[in-house]
Image (cartoon, rainbow, N blue to C red; front, side):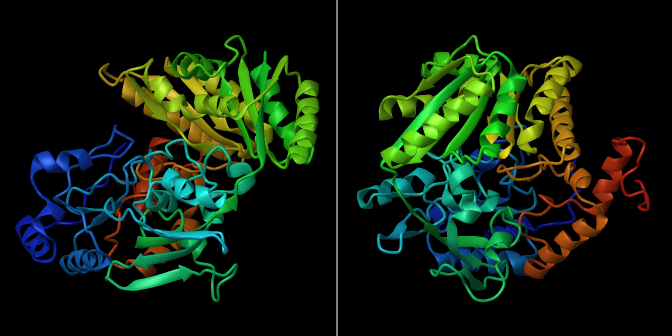
Length: 493
């Protein structure tokens, strides 16, 4: 994927001198060996070295860093734990990385209002651990929840296996405290169920660090259910498994989680986790119900009836909390499990209508033949969020390019099927070309106007998420779809 030449030219000596005036020595990294760990996030195929890394310990230091960078015209990339998979936290070669890793305090847990106020560097799982003594937990649970941070979850609007019933990050955040690129503090949302004025929470959450730097997040907590059970269903046919997902939702059932893995994914996971998966099945569905024992029993019965009618040849219900967690452990470990059987893999993140799952899986199988690469598929099936894992070897000439083209085809087919190029991983640099397929010129112009309203100099995470129209013109020249040239009115380079 080509990246546009940077329009920023930074005097590194001046930048470092100014940063040393506002940060203690242990909060500023400038040597190559110290900068190297920050050159990429979870999307390791793309890398860049920043000019400096700032590790502020107070909001005042964040303000000073942003004001300094604004005055000098220096790009700023905010970073959490670096677990993102779209290159959203990859540094800018003429800029600084602003790490919020030291903002790792849980400020308060309020049992009565069922909320928690946390700093952005707090790990996702740590919020639930802090709320557990009150019988509460934080619902969004990305597979990386043991490591990923709340600030990163806000930036990418992360989800997880339970997002079908409990929602994504945007549905579970009440308030944000944000610092603008000019160093001004503003707050969005509030502690009440509704806040005055426009609902800008949905604008900030998922904005990938393009609009401001979050320094505090107030999240909703939910009561821990009395009981949770998982039905594990095996299918001889992938298409039937996909149709079963649509049938469950059509029956008016909203499970706590509804996940799918194909045979390749299950084969990679089972030796790693020993979750008890059926390795002869073409696809496995995990469907969880939670609530009171009576509610769970009734919903599990309905789910099993739908799955049987949809062609499941084997059904198992978790009989203990340990077994339930083991079933989920396999799904949550899919990414590292695939990493054990291939030198490299490329994790995609498209979303399609549930009824098109079978069609997409058939298309991916054909793409495996087209590109000569294997692909394991895991899904947040309940909301149509795909995570194909394209396996390749970066040391072999041409394999990364084929993997990238394979991923682009999946994303563009997602759009053609009525879906989106991303569900929870963000756009970053990974999918920026596919934004040109998803959106037309007026929509992209509107995105740029929103960006300019918050960051007129375009210093926050530049060249990410929202492509320029000239970039889309160039991509349209490279990838003509059905004979239609994208943005024909724009000059080609």
